Image (cartoon, rainbow, N blue to C red; front, side):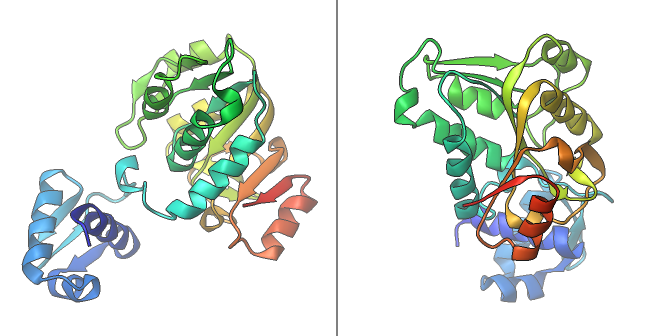
Length: 259
């Protein structure tokens, strides 16, 4: 197991359990206790956790993994979802992309689409995600519009009134939302209220809204609501989704695409 994969596994376990013991974690990950101690020390230096005698605890009461540590979670599912989302977008459209691992994969799928290799522009992408803008800016056939705002370290997203000012001046054909939770009753949601506010505005400026979410995020709630389920036109998820969950979203009027 590589160091990056091990760190990801450690942080995921910490999110799930709140506290980890060196010896138990070493046995679970099949590495030495010395390796785990070294990992804990290095993650503590980055303020990703707090070291304790014989282990580690989550850093703070509310714990949200930065984007760079989420990229490998359910990676194959997210890539399939991203490809399905990209197939729903037409050349020449103005597309809003929120931040997140799944929407980053959407951007990558769009970047390699053959019919978007040229155009004036082939696609207009509006995003508040610095990493997405960086990946697509090297594609001269894409028109990239980046909102202003203050960057969140966890998600690379720009938030705040400076972002609002840009989004209030534009219209979009489609908004693609990455979410941490999506439920028929409670709608689409994020951990952070500032991110939710920007995502909500993207939805309001769009003719149609697509939620790109792997099945682990469905039927869940999170702190800050982005929009109600009835504001979403299409849900794209993975094949592990329960048939009952699909039925509930379809009864709520959504088109569900299973990738």
